[in-house]
Length: 636
Image (cartoon, rainbow, N blue to C red; front, side):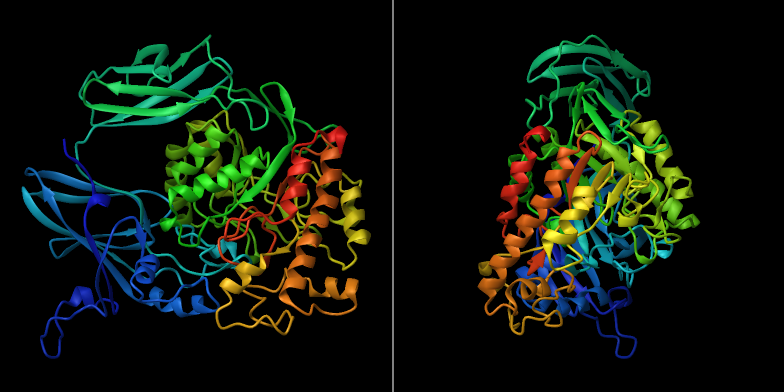
């Protein structure tokens, strides 16, 4: 059986006027056509944008308004190509972990087929190949024109990530390229996959499926502590097995002990092998004291201990996610661990994260709340239910299950971010009866039965906190606010959080400026003066976070320097989060947790609700967040 990692190949990338690559020769003068952007050597994984930047063909999109100069990339066809060596005649295929987003795959100058969808893997059939050298290529077609923050969720295609098209915390940079993995293999290559994996404090339940295995294959399954055997058994592919009464240590949350991990090793004779890590823990969701009977339970009990959920909403590290180095994941997860975070909510406007993210959360003792890739749009916020969206979401759900179902850090699924009906004040969250949410739930119940799913975040009777609803039992899992609606923090903002009666606050925050150093480094041609929410210096990409009126309220004037504004803004963020987090944790267990929007910047924003800026420095407000996160409720 043949198996080759194509990331180790030498590749070239070229950019074409659409369809010129297919035409080959000019119809008029019969001359061979050439690429508009001549071939450049690249090493995979890499996005088109990063390759062009590395070769000085575009300017750094993080500086000034340079991101506007990148949109032409979306209006070309991009060709990745290389030569491959095939050792023997036979049937071959390519398994691609991430092709972002759609296009054609080529073999020896001929178009073999079309691929579409960046949220799941593709297995592309090459057919019968003779031994020797062959030329393969991937041509990327135009992405969808608009999938950004605003529009109609019910009409948004689900195969491409939306945040690339701008959100209130990132500019437009519509990624194109090859990521995750790219494997050339024979079509009969044996494979093992984990259909489902469940643990308790002392048991492990598994079902391992096989593909292209010899008849009567027996699987040998070992549970290892480092290299030491803990338990072992045999099974046939597709058989569910349970190992009980295991002598294992529990996987503990960050701040509660060691996040102990074990290795499961599965072998199918000498033809296939698979290893993955597991942890042992118990988990229950309990009703919050005083909650309405119909409310979902938002009190988490882990290993018999009620836990206040404290953490951040996780958004992509960069808009060009393909190019994020592993070290960036390690840096950020360590920063969150040091802040005593115990949960990260992987936001639904992007793709699932790379495998390393979940591995690091396993190691750090950080729970993961994973959303499927759906999000609100403003004009309407209900998920699509057309046939194509349902088909695509089934492929996405299968991919998510395959990559995530073994991770002990995965605690909760959600159908998406802010899916709701605009039919009442505060909006009414989707309840899970929607067809596409039913589809997701079916996958979750079959593949990860110990990891429950909520329809959306927020959920319950009201999506947002409405002051006039206090005391009526309608605030279950709620979002917002993301800054004080009034300039005087000690007035409405303090009163709001003292009276807030939600069972869980899974997304809220307060803005704070990035450092003066960072602002100057990325300002480019822009000028910070005038201090105004129409000055593009401050409004990349929106004006929501500047709060100039608050400084004017306190000082009687607008800021005179960038330094003055940054110092004031960062202190306001500190005080805002202190006033919010302290009373929420005091209310535990009636309040089950506080998950801040947001953790880190993926673009050098002048101001944002993040606690970690683009240069990976903590803003001053991180000090008070850590204080609350490391304190017991009764000590606040």
